[in-house]
Amino acid sequence: MLSQLALSIKESPTLKLNETAALLRDKGEPVIHLGGGEPKSRTPIDAIISCTSLLNSGEIRYSPADGVPALKKAIIRYTEEYYGRIVKPENVLASSGAKQSIMVALHAIVDPHDEVVFPAPYWVSYPEMVKLAGGVPVPVVPSDGSFHPSFEDITLAVGAYTKAIILNSPNNPSGVVYSDEFIAQMVEFCQRKDIWLIMDDTYNRLVFDGRKPTNCYSFTEEDVDRSKLLVVNCVSKMYAMTGFRLGWAVGNRDLIRAMINIQSQQTSGPATPSQWAAVGAINGMQNSIEALRTTLENNRNVLVSRLQAIPGVKVTKPGGTFYTFPDFSAYDRSSQKLANYLLETVRVVVVPGKEFGMDGHLRVSFCGAIKDIREGLERIQWALDPNAPNELFLGSRKLVRDAV
Ligand SMILES: Cc1ncc(COP(=O)(O)O)c(C=O)c1O
Image (cartoon, rainbow, N blue to C red; front, top):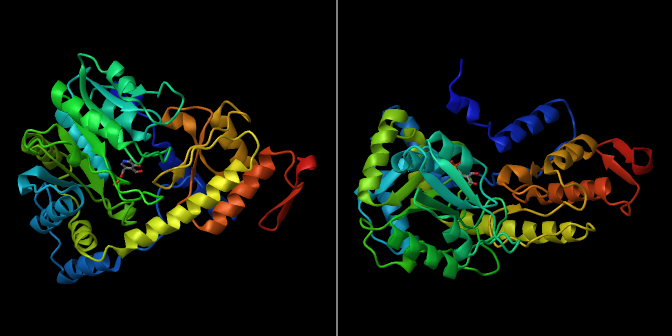
């Protein structure tokens, strides 16, 4: 007999889709995966050198629950460079991915039935993580039909039980970058109302069109130890190191202490080879991030123009990340049905918008090869648009629309 909690938690739909795509590929199917959430670039060389030098020592031991001192030092330097804040080791926790930092933060903050507010569309894991912590997820759909919540949208959802707000900008899945004005208002509001503000900065430096990464600390003079801000980062996306599972949180020392206690009982410190890889990445040459950012910006331009060419599809140009979240409701209001149809007919993987709190949309990623983006969109257009060319090749298989 399983617990009520276990029964209430869904499998991660994005991880599940990766498995489905891999299974189909193993069977020789010409699958194009536009549902992914990881850049294709290689691990930065400084990360590999730093990690292998630990491995070569043959001394791979437990680390402190909050991370090895060299990593905490690197995170402190990163925080100073990119957020202009000098923090202490007591303000820093390294975890197994941004995911674990957010999870232990929620465990440290949420009492049964407390509410955690976040804008929709949202990263698939927030509702399930809040439930795992015993809380109640409160997603907020922007009232103007956009992907950018207003200050009023959020504050109207805040009540006596609200313990925390999570903001993720640039946003997965919409790619929207929240305005500086909105972030500044949220920082001030949370401080005044004594509500934790978790800034999920997983995609912080992956922004386009000459935009500067948002620095939430620039909107407050409050000392970190009195601040309600908890800033979460990771090497997963910006450094293309998803498999290392290394993230971190910076914030108020009392909250960080509680998070360390929880993590120490849960998993102990993150894997030490991953920690040393992160030390290399954070302290090393940063040009891989700029190279990735430029590639993504180019991919975005190609993807957006292809999406705009499909009649009836409404697309908001992403200002960052590697995701678009176009509205395909003109074809099917059920994003699940549409995603299944695209996988079955043209072997293209996309993620149903329902998983992110907005049905009718599909999340289409642009972190893969440009060739896949072009071909994937050609296939999607063939499957949906009656005016697209009648024939399509899937590998060596020829599809004829009128015959489908
Ligand atoms: C918004 C957001 N936060 C956190 C994560 C998790 O990051 P990590 O792989 O470092 O746990 C992801 C991964 O997709 C994400 O999109």
